[in-house]
Image (tube, rainbow, N blue to C red; front, top):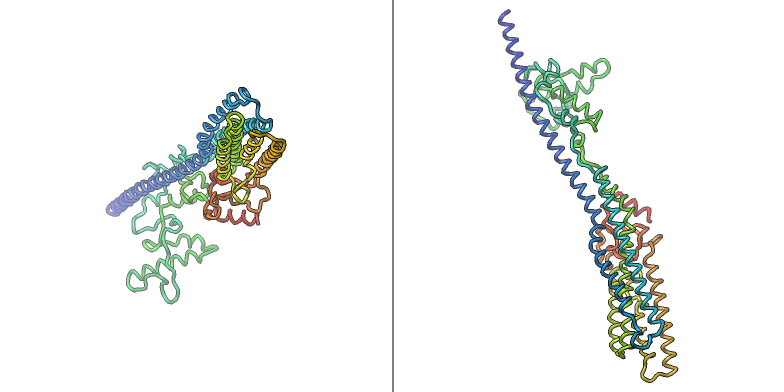
Length: 464
């Protein structure tokens, strides 16, 4: 009796110590898995937060470039309005020429002021959207104190297990819990033998067959034999895990968000939620950012045109330099053409708009008006050319209105193009919403978040 009690005592101490050491090792691995998974998720969401900041920074970057240039240009406009007055020391120039010159200055001032306001509006809305998304939706998955306490196990929690798990003899008694899904690939059998498994005889072959029969019995058992099939375990031949593993898996399946490793179960599905959130937020300021570029172009064009209209007045009406007026007006008109061509797609009227050449035609009109031998025919030609200049200015206004309006119903909707047009990179992402001007280059638009192939195909079908 004494020898039997001592044997039971030693066996119990052996099982308790062995299982306690295994539990301590498992919990260390479990904590390492938790910290590694959470660390990876924090890095992943840090990249998501960078995506939001980078996409919102596009408007801010354009603000830093556009606003200083526009502010200095407004100063130039005010200076020219005050200082560049004609007719003080010499006879006043024709009214149509002074009217065009002052009209271009006024239009330039108005559109540059509007561009500055749109730049600030887009940048501020982008910053607000970025802060809101980064503080409310795209947040770092830092574990809470409850999740840390749930993931961190101490040795006293070992005693919360069942008596069987604490005193189970190693290699003699089977594990009490089910093995995690996919932890071990089971071998399938048929009447001819093992499929894809060990086909030799001896102890290895017997062990493999025994494991297969136990597994088949557990799968086929049902009804009253269900519990018996579940309990069909053989030491060394049945895969299993400690009871705490099975409880953790069940708790994770029941409450995935509350489990310690809830963020480590699987990667976020595509399209990523933060991309869709920033895509929706961009709709609040995307049009302001795009039309800031449009008004910037119109304002700068009219500023250069105002100089182009004033220099012929100064050269011909005050200095008598006819060819100097021709050179100045043609040079500045070419600059306006280049600016217009750089922002407007050629197929939408941005190639060679002839109505932008009004300053050069004005120089011809002034040359006839200020001829050394004035005649009635020369004055009539000057007046007719002046009417042509006014009509060209009206045509320029209509063209700017047409290219600046949104591209609703455009057959080319959905793919903005670069300045190369024929050399356009079709593989690049150049999304063009319906409420933006389709005639302008992609420099007018923000960088849109990427879309998955299914989204692009759905949008293409809706457009077709």
